Picture: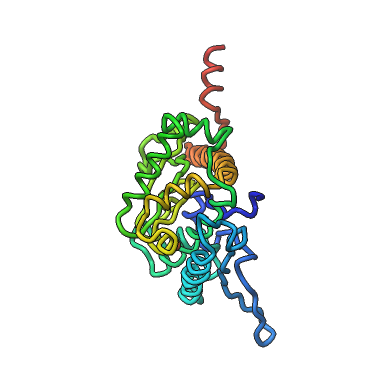
Length: 301
Ligand SMILES: [Fe+2]
């Protein structure tokens, strides 16, 4: 699966502080209508299908579950979302944009639940693949070993998060590369070793995008995701998900994208910080600025 086909979770936080109209338009998610010779733009979030046939995850997840879960539940979220956002300021944003703006720092707007549930489900379907499960490899496994101690320890933590989420919600593996929002305090850019993988759980429709994390894996633990196949045996469903369904290839690809986006974001934040510093110098004169390491080298010379 190419990176472009993956649900892209990685909208840089700084884009949020700008006008909502600055979000990148996703032409695949909107339709254009012509009315009386005038072009009228109408946002249209599509029901994105899983990247495999609906029976492809059997016997671990049945076609009936996919038909019900994707075909009815997710369709309902998409249909309701389109009704909610048409004609509003959210109309025309990408799905990610609607999620982030409608989260509204926790004081959620009406569209948030349907938007986030749509995003979460797309991400969930793409987290699985026929013949999935087993163990990751490469950089992903290295980071899991570094941040959890071992793959088995990660599995235990993920299972605990997923099984202990009371009621409806989600469990996630996410790449945490954000800085604390501490206003004017000195807040240096995170170093590579400060960026790490974390397991988190979230209630209802909430996802780690709203905490400025980069999600790379999720499991849906709403009862509708497992009841047909596992009845009330959530723990068996979680174990099967990890052992037979997870697409570690996709998770690895998401991790690489997250690392790359995080680095780009840090560079952009540093560039903006330097520009602001420069603009705030007395007289607003453009003065040459040096990187810390360069300054140290200059002093040493
Ligand atoms: Fe669901």
